[in-house]
Length: 170
Image (tube, rainbow, N blue to C red; front, side):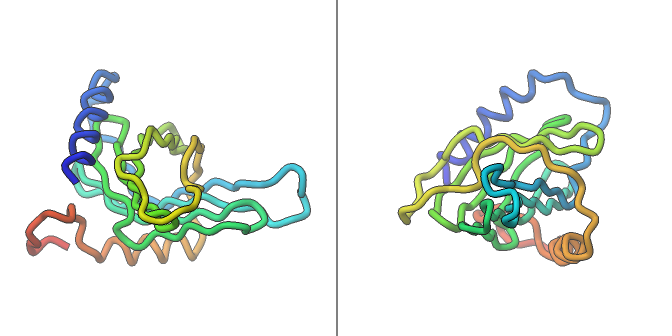
């Protein structure tokens, strides 16, 4: 875990050189991108979804990914995404359910879009397999009933790092 914290601190230091707005960005929301296979346009598209709850500088959330043609799934549990906000960017640690890896990503907000970029693996996985959450994505707000329901459920959960002592905050 100290490797993850150290890596996050380094990324935050780099991100802190970016121009910072007078106010903190608001990452709350459900975000989604389609992932289609151009060779098989009739087949179902995959998706990459993020559900994020922000409390001050802290972000907690959940992720879901499905490869094109639904050939591979990656379903994160609530709390599979943890991070911190730095100006208009956030550094996130994602628990990869397929491999057990801990990936580090940077997300930035633009009007109506969330830009996602995995910058590396903080901890190697316990299981063989390939990750389908890596790379770069441009996600849009997802206002579907399912996305809003998932977001509502996340808002009721505590938002803390694994080594924190529980407090009364939700």
